[in-house]
Length: 601
Image 1 (tube, rainbow, N blue to C red):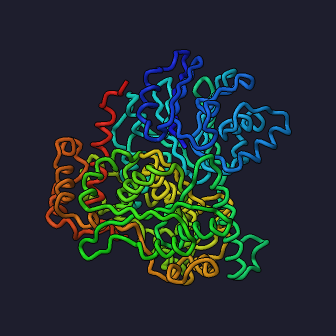
Image 2 (tube, rainbow, N blue to C red):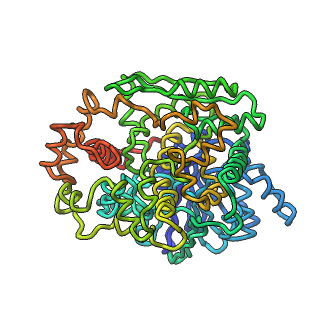
């Protein structure tokens, strides 16, 4: 787990090494254990290192293999790297390190861009062929690791974060109106390749992009889960499905213990993270460190779920850490949370993850979490209304339960310069949900949420908030083999028993009933879910700031009405509309600071 960046030129000029150094240094929190910059002709690579596998200098990056004519920067973890190393050794390759990064280099040399099909894990990498000048960029199947791109004339830059690209300069920061539409309509999800800036794109998940020395490029999507019945599984009942899913998850959590440092678990007390702990305990994991967070109660809302996390810790004998965050720490944490975001994210969970990661990183470098289960196994309350909807009507029904506002409502919110005469969010969802490979309306919704919403909301949240403190987050529910299996599970089994039914029933042999049958919980952050006091002042100051006025995103009358009643207007899914507007503007202001800030030397 690290931060990567680089620049490649197409006109014979040498890359701007100072820009690559600036990008590298800006990502120091992602990799506090080391840094490196490599220059070869028209390409420069930068890397910040978080030491997880091969803690020696031999595992440092950028990694250069002169014999193969390849150089690499890589962010993530390849969980099957030992098996691949053995296979490649038998094919005649020799290794100078024990790092998973070197395995990628050798795998690329043997299989070319198709090497991604051999990798099990989370990754974003860049490989330069120092003989031909070709650059290859790749991202893992579920988009767990980010990769952003900025192209200008005869130059391409890439980095693990948008702030890094801004630090390098030369970015067109005009607002991408399609991205703005997605953010304010598609529940703050901005699908690839768009970002909030016209001058920055993101490589889609499960994609390999190959760039020739003249700047021409090709993209290939190498993986897509199929949400239709599998012929070998049509006779499975709920019990068989549950057994197979648990077995697959068992493999996934075992894979994610691969490390040369201890691995802990973020334990919310919900069924998903509790299952991770149970399966690790079942496998004989000793002295497992678990971490839970809690906040002060506010506005009648409880601020912790210690009752359930304590029960799981006691049941499985983990070394449990309860991290309580006083309300007076919330407000000061918001600016740091926003500055850590590569893209604007509306969920209050971000502040919770940010503060939790800050504390956890003091004692451990790697944690597993339960993110992703709800999207993959139908755990959210917007899925049941789709169960009996005709397949052809899925987008209308989905939008009614998930979209934050209609196209007309959005245009009433925005000033004329930012309005669109078409509805790209609706069209995106329609095209995705009506493509082949999903049998029912629920399947079509789950496919969209698994491959798009999950990537650009909860998964991105985990990556940015953990990496803000040099903490690696691993997500076993996003093991691609688990996702492939779950995608073929009948939707009625997923929606049973109040959602995630097949997983709940299979978990009864592993978990206390109190955890399985509890009301679904969320990261509780009541101190900022209700806007008043200092949080409301921050929101007000943000929306009234000179930069906000100059940018002029929102209609003044709409903002004034929201500020007059800050907790009344909610989106379809219950988010605070004022908070959503303020978070975008707060992020844009933070990025202006990031781009203008001098780079420390």
